[in-house]
Image 1 (cartoon, rainbow, N blue to C red):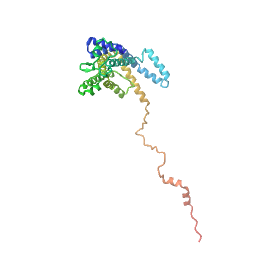
Image 2: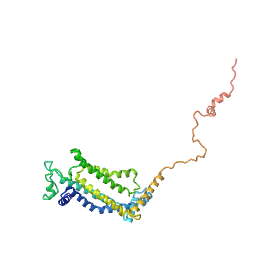
Image 3: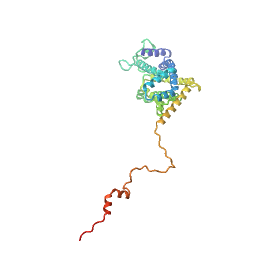
Image 4: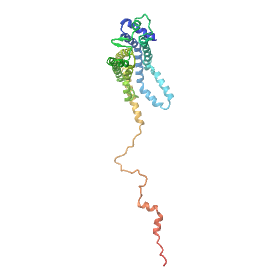
Length: 317
């Protein structure tokens, strides 16, 4: 697979004679391949969201029986022809692609025995890409070394390294816009405000991770991120175009499920005792006051009371 990715870059380089454009065209091809999976995943996710009120009802009905709950859930999925794993398809596809692209780019810029000059892997030695890289120390395109990561670029030359950092910052901005587009139409009954905020800034964290990757891979993700903006606009138009669309139905179902979840939490809270303000005050004290009353003192020492009541006999003279 590494050879296939490297040869694809080599093919596009033969057309463009530009490293960044060749990598960008590979990103376009990959996005064309996974877009059908993304659309299928989005549809499956919306169908799952549309079932949330029914899923909430089943959770309340089989609260103490996990096995029956799972059986009821599977029956619900089967009746509505929903695959709960469909939403994971693009993510499952992206992970191996990331590894393949990382290894392919690392192989193209692999240093030789001297540790300085390139000795490219995964390429035919007669290819134009191999001939342009072998013996070189940089993979320069548009004034940027694609073999260098932004951290090393800043350490080598701070002023020139800022261009690499700016590229990562621009990528973070695109990710942020993309996430805002997704979050604006997503309604989850189980997601708190804090979780939603974390999800919103997760792409920025991912972009910061790019600081440690070769700039060639950043170019790859930059092109993909731009394509995803258009992809999300298409998804909004296709699935959220009118009130009867699948997306609108899923949003309404999500709101109902959230309301059900809120009502369940309210019902579990202990109810506070209410008192009538017009009722007379009644003390709840059950212990006698400290020191007691005079009558209590008299009753508590009967011996003293009796001795004082008996008259004394006069002494004999």
